[in-house]
Length: 608
Ligand code: F6R
Image (cartoon, rainbow, N blue to C red; front, top):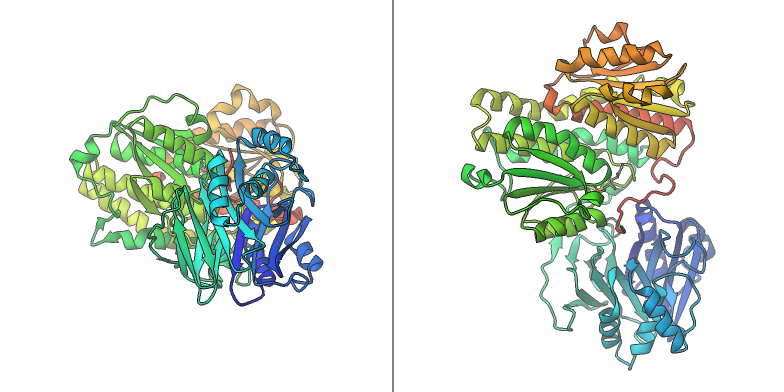
């Protein structure tokens, strides 16, 4: 979703802002703009469309001279993606420019109030009220104007503010929307996420909700909402520039698929020492774990599907009831939660608005929270009682791949650790399952290597108007993720069903040639899934099965088979998803889709 960058220093700001915006493109956006101060005025340039167009318009920034500026990529919420609605927005007197990520919930009332005071609105955005409030509260001290403005805003916002009278000063404000400060030498920055900062600095300060910062080339001061300075720790960014670049791959998505063996290794290996699982801070005793009589997993999209897959492992190994609930449903569901509930919150970005809200709701009802998050210092990571990072590194493609498999790896590690501590997994089973986990990185590599035939399969399936993904139990969870991958990047209608459920209605849609992807990696239920394969084939379906290498039964039933290496059922979703990621990728490529930035989607969904 929207991305924000800011720069102040001794170099020309515009080229650096444009470069920062390029690095934020993956978040999803539909217009872009920059504002730079110089000579007592603010110059704004913005376009609907891509950052590339903004680069052309500004001659790569040369047409917008000045050493301090802000930039923005907008994902439209209030008002269409037009030039006028693009950020930055300028105050009527031209003294303030603002970029904003989030939603101002009371904007309609503020707009009415400001219009009555004579302020003229140019755009349909909620953001524009902010810049007029700044002008309204301005008495010559921009810091006070920022504080007074923020006090009037309701909703979520990360703001970057530029003031014509202070050509070497920027303000950055955070409330329920990510914003990170970067500390350089003789120059300072802010951005929505570290990918826009890593090529300039590795030193970052994470703003907390209700804080704002004043940046000049000489330093950064962080204040609380009443203007008192706050001491903030400087965090060293561990991601490097290469990690946020394509490294020779045609798309980030393919690169990230290929990175999965290393990413899963980074998620698992450092947490396993001498046969012991070490979960930073969450190494609770049997007695402490025994307090929980219920686990609820909440998340959105693929992270929710990771939760659906993990539910089986958590229940099997811990023998505690587990429920996976979509965050957007949980937040308004009046859930039965108390202090004996452990809420497991899963999020790659750590900034998903629905997930944050569900987490808040459950905490208010007494639940303890364990976050499984990739982005260090993100809102969810910081607000949970315990946080386990997935250590996937930057995920740039909008469709998650290594984000998802590292979530699974950490969840399975958690299930095994909890089951052992609770005394519900004996030593032999523990050692066997730990062995499975340790083999995962190698097995993921095998799953990738086994599937060099997928580009050819994609040519067979890419014209289908509709695809069905079926499976039972753990395989159903994998099928859910497989279908989501397919639809979001190839734009082909794809539906996932519990295999036994098809005949209760959906089988009516199966006709001659309808592709059905059948996940058959749960050996105990394979015969049952094969019966469902037979049923759909009898109605003309073309079946592509995902199965373990060496599975002979499936060969005679399916039209095509893609293989993964053998592993125990509980952890099989990590491997089963690999060929489905590749299939979605190559089908999307056949169809000429914008794979890394699918239409209508954003990487980090920071609005409800
Ligand atoms: C799908 C995808 C989304 C995210 C969802 C949650 O490929 O990436 O479905 O999984 O938006 O995002 P996070 O994990 O950042 O909370």
